[in-house]
Image 1 (cartoon, rainbow, N blue to C red):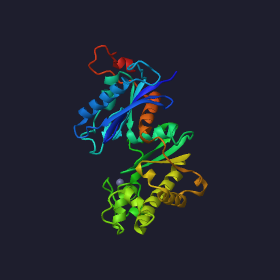
Image 2 (image 1 turned 180 degrees about the vertical axis):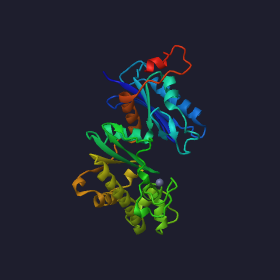
Image 3 (image 1 turned 60 degrees about the horizontal axis):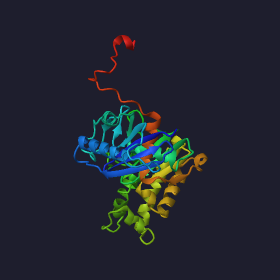
Image 4 (image 1 turned 135 degrees about the vertical axis):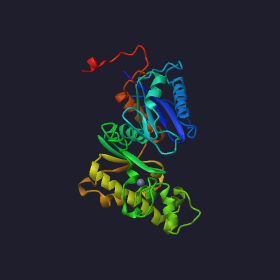
Length: 332
Ligand SMILES: [Zn+2]
């Protein structure tokens, strides 16, 4: 029998929700801007409202709207998420987001088991199980957009680490970033050099046109502007070199490149692969770097896949009178 989950993806700019089957098919989806500055109560309320609204949408092939049954809710959220579905820490992209008990709040609203993961982990799982990583047991996903993140996915589950923070690939040290201050406060990390934000900064540091502020403008100039060519080459080959080191450590079946920079064009990919082949072990040189294929739905598909497989029931509230009482006697 087909199992179905409601998936909710809470990001810094938008919230998406969808009803997804265990085969990774997104039956219905909707999205709305995140009320990022209004605090966790507003953000959670908007996520629940959007989730309720997609459950009320007519599912293709099902003539009666609002009758879709879900087995679980999977939530992907910005921030570091602990085993209990709580936000442990977050950047200030969502005001006061740290401390939010997402599993409890969303569980109360929908009455089914809930699983909460970091949104980058959800995205990586989606690509690994239903996208470009299909058929591979171990997948390394590298997301290169305004920042650089990613995940290692093994058998459909993300490696989350001891503190929920695994996958901060942008904070690998790289020689070419020496002296550059990173978003984390440290110096010499990959992110300020090779991210979509880093590329135009590098271009201008090398003496390029001071009016250029967007990575797409740099990429568009590589044919005619030697400084743009040098910037793309430096940024992409450093990223490729770091990925080679990760492949040497993790030995994935495939490496998926996602995020805005996956569309940075043939020259960027050529430099990325050159840097990669210079650093990867000869024995692992056949491991391919491939672009992501699921775009916006990856996090919904990943969150639903994890929820259907692993979601657990939300514990009853401590003051619930009908909750079974566990005494010390029972625990022994
Ligand atoms: Zn850093």
